[in-house]
Amino acid sequence: MCGIVGYIGTQKASPILINGLIRLEYRGYDSAGISTIEKSGISIMKDKGRVKNLYNLKGIDDLEGTIGIAHTRWATHGKPSKENSHPHMDNSKTFSVVHNGIIENYNELRNFLSDNGYKFYSQTDTEVIPNLIHYYYSKDNNDNLKFLRAVKSACNDLKGSYAIEVICNDYPDNMIVVRKDSPLVIGKGENENYISSDIPAILSFTKNFYLLNDFEFVLLSRDDAKFYDKDLNPIQKNTQTIEWNASSAEKEGFEDFMLKEIYEQPNAIRETIGSRFCEDSKCEFDELNFTREFLSKFNKIYIIACGTAMHAGLAGKNAIEKLCKIHTEVDIASEFRYRDPLVDEKSLCIFISQSGETADTIAALKLCNEKGATTLAITNVIGSSLTREANYSIYTHAGPEIAVASTKAYTSQVVLLVILVIYFAEILGLNSKDISSLKKEILELPKKIEKTLELSSDIKDFSKKVYQEKDIFFLGRGIDEAVAKEGSLKLKEISYIHSESYAAGELKHGAIALIENDVTVVGIMTDPKLVEKTVSNIQEIITRGAKTLVVTNQNIDTSMFDFVVQIPETTPFVSPILSVIPLQLFAYYISKEKGLDVDKPRNLAKSVTVE
Image 1 (cartoon, rainbow, N blue to C red):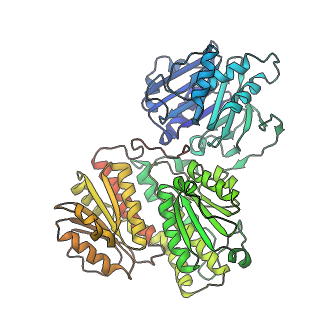
Image 2: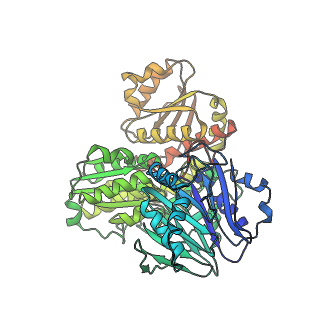
Image 3: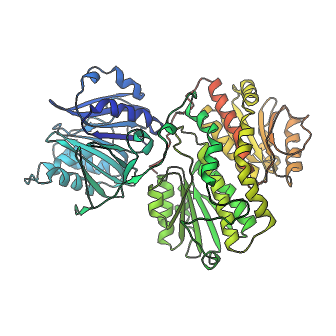
């Protein structure tokens, strides 16, 4: 969940490294540091707190090195402190290392190294890495590829996940990087190479990237990148061009990335729909090319994801079961592996992750592959770990999402899932009036989102009235319950207000005991088959003194509610895309009223790459 950056070239490294860290701060922000190779040897500048604190460090402006590594941390082992900040060095000050991931056997390695005379100055798992590299390096008398062999030998001893960058005093013109179960990309420039745990951090420098697989070692120089497999056999890799616009990783006049990304949703939906269908044509997924015989063998579909992506999966479940008549389960990825799931060759398992690097989701996918299931990844990042493990992959086209709290990635996932379901239904010969009208509704979504965003100022006004609340509840039935979950999560993530979501019909089975005078309750009502029942449920809480915010596209008597957001009418299959937008804005404006950092909420990072 940390962020790492590296540079080797002809320019001063320190400004490039710090700039990359600022762009990666959504991955971790309790401490930061950079390490460069200067004429006097390896230099390390680091401190706890935000990346901007690096500018205040004595000597930071005097760095001249053109090779360096950098890190912004989200603490796992050891509290946020200067000592626990990365980069870390070995005792001899020969190697400097940054690391993203978790070394599960670090205590065992630490004891081994201590027995061999090494001392430790931090509480981190990472500090064993440079010392372990030095241990092997000091025992190797062959200069040819000595640096690379030492890193490889150290990695053989590591258990867990890692993306590692290493620089060495004895090799001032080289850097070594390697990954296992943690993201790492290399951006190719002219007489320079950029390294990062995420593409947006270096997107302004290049669009040509090497995407690394597990256990691939890279020996970098200014004008070259040599790739080796886990046995140090040379391998060939080609670059891939990433077409994201670099400006997508900038605020472009918006106060926060989250607000910018909320307003980018109409275009993100347009790009995700792309040319997959028009109103009178069948859906096309060239990357799938499924047949009726292939799809007919599946008797069960699993949708597996974490957090917001799991909520998108709930919308997919609704569409699959209603349009394709296939039993579908939505599972939390972190729990899936541990319940011995009944998965076999007749199971289709769909995995959703914005980054494609979510550790729990990747682990669940590997299990499903072992059990013989067909696996399909839905992600926003080409070449991510999830896509390389899955049998099939399809992509949203939301562009870079920088704010920790997901918005445009979620709505893009929902729309792509629904389009995928239409594709399945048409192949299975289940074409219906529902599908024909659904295509039309999907094509109209971008304009309806723009209409919904016009309600922003009204939502801001209501947010000012309730931002000091300690508890807020979200209610919905059917597809609206899935939206209630996502709305509640957004509020928790960025406002730190305790929030719960409930199926509205469950209120009377216990949760209504929590309702007292002036408690705020948010109700979502978009399904015409359930709206009367939801109104009845909300009336029960009004009689107990609750304040109510209602998001609806139904023709109902609104006089009983304190505040109503009337969104454009659409089918329940895609209503989560519209009904969630007022809830995103609601969470955003409450957070702003509280004076919080919207883009970087406490204790959270964008991509969860550790279990």
